[in-house]
Image (cartoon, rainbow, N blue to C red; front, side):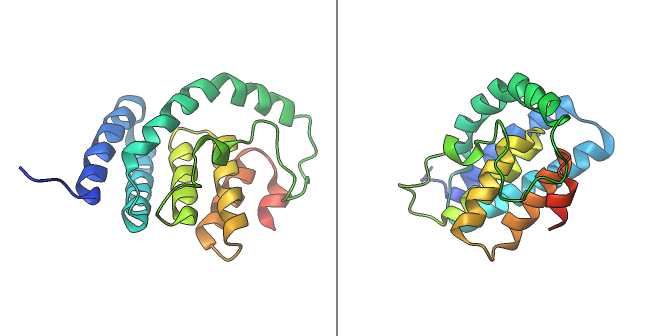
Length: 162
């Protein structure tokens, strides 16, 4: 057998992630997550980026569980009208993936990683990734929408509406 394409390898890794989602979600939550996973895979395919490289993010997702819960408790005491550009405690999503040496579209990779983090309900990690994509391309709708979704999920409704 010859070398597989990036799209084929991405499909294989997406199947692994899908099995994790199947184990932890049910019904409509699972359907939404599978749709989101397909969008992540499509972004990676379009950027010619190996989805399997996100396996490094899996460790961050697992390690961030407790810190996200602590940050969520702290945010409960924070002004819900905080600014859009104001970084939140625990926001680091872009920093865990080295995009400087990539030969592909860094905006798509950042938005894909943000969406990947959201699959596992890690809005702070996702916000950092979406915010970095937005900084790279302020006109990217996926980055702006991702930021708004994350801000909404962490209680920053006014900032999300901007």
